[in-house]
Amino acid sequence: MDSNDQVAVEDYRQGYHRFSALVALDDAFTAFRRFHRLRVRLLLLRQDKITLLEKRLDAIDGKEPCPSFLGCRRMDGNTEREAVISEIENALAGYDALIQRSNQVLGFESPESQHDLSLQNWLEGNACIAREESRFLEHSDDLFTFSRSNDRVVSWLERTVSKLLAFLGMWSRPNSSRDPHVHIFPKLRTYRLARTLLAPFVTCLLLVPVAVCNLLESPTARLVVMTTATSVFAMALSLLTKPRTVELAVAGAT
Image (tube, rainbow, N blue to C red; front, side, top):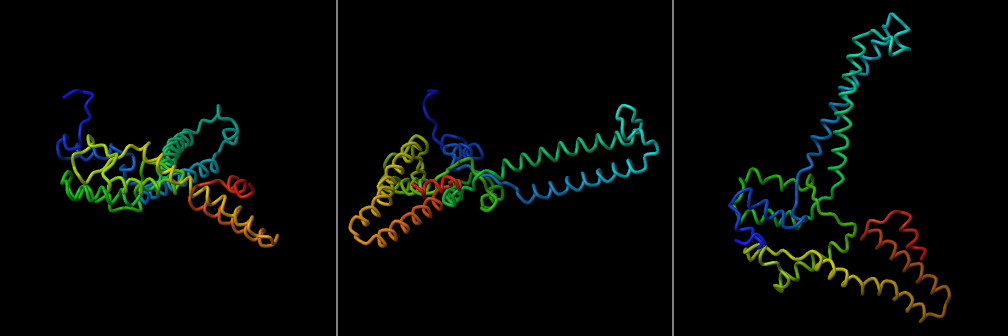
């Protein structure tokens, strides 16, 4: 086989090899557990350990018979204090590292329920990994994905476009999988098509209030229409995207 030829998922041996090949086709298929509860527990345990070390250090300082040792590190000959400080440093390093890793993992978005269900359905039809080892997909509230999207409406349109293309049998990448139930579409194409479909909606949202105002003669009625339209636009922007407060204010003002 030529190294440039794309290998289909079914060309991999059954098992984690094939399942990994499927998941790697699209970031939207990536789904891993956060282990949120366990991370919180570890943080609580490490926090308590550091608290005990803090109390030990305070007790050592309080019982220090030589006050000059407390004000001069170079002269400090208390080996017990030195040992406890070293323990605290190591404990804090582990605590800080766990906080940073947990913050990074918890910052990932949750996968779409549709993609999670698709993986479960695929595993039902392709016994690649043990059922017990695939149960992690059932923890939908604890899963994260590498796929990111800052625009909810575009993501929804992309999923809708993918369903439509699958129904019509268009644009699918046949070399990715020979399974007729697996449809992988070029991400750039679906994204552009979703953006294209979004354009008329945004245009109507912006121009319809202007057209209505041109038909009204009463200044009060025009003010009501513009106020309502601005409120609807700001609400839609807030619900369908992830704008910052200042961006929302600017959009409403313009």
